[in-house]
Image (tube, rainbow, N blue to C red; front, side):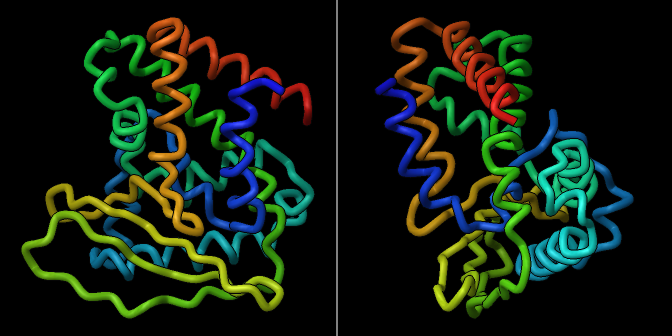
Amino acid sequence: MNSSKVMMQPLLLRMRYLILAMMMIASLIVSRPIFAQAIDSAPDSLVKTIVTEVMSSIKGDKEIQSGNISKVIDLVDTKIVPYTDFRKTTQLAVGRNWSRATPEQQNKIIAEFKTLLIRTYAGALTQIRDQTVVYKPFRMDPADTEVIVRTQIMNKGDLIQLDYRLTKQGDSWKLYDINVLGAWLIEAYRGQFITQINASGIDGLIKFLEDRNASLAKAK
């Protein structure tokens, strides 16, 4: 079996039941203040509002439930992109090799990584039915610029750990990493990215992402 597929399987198994893995999916980081102004700036309130709106949108949209990828992308761009720092997510996943990439290569990696996450985890969004979210007690110091909001998803009697890591940017908070059953998304992908870069450089990573996206597109 292809080694990259073997590395990806544990993550896919962890993500199978998760309804909000799309939280880390974003575009080339276009901040949209009009949305940010409509949401409580506290990180736990931000997460709660996004979760509520995403779940409500999916439960009310038969096309998303049936796996319509265009509708999934629209939902992500509207409900999730404004509150994420996907450039930070991608940079941390690539690690020390990020500085080796040209601005053009960096933007290409970001775009392909976004597409990969959408196509890989779109199915998780279609599984939203009667799941409920339990929010863990949240505490932070006013001086904190990095926080974790911890939640659990109640899915058919099982409690699934789902935590969000946020960073403060000015007066607002942005999501940039997600923890699924003890595995952070950035760490899970970093190993794959390093392997690809060590084998064939930055362009090799880009090709790996392009090939994965092409394979997933054919499978739909």
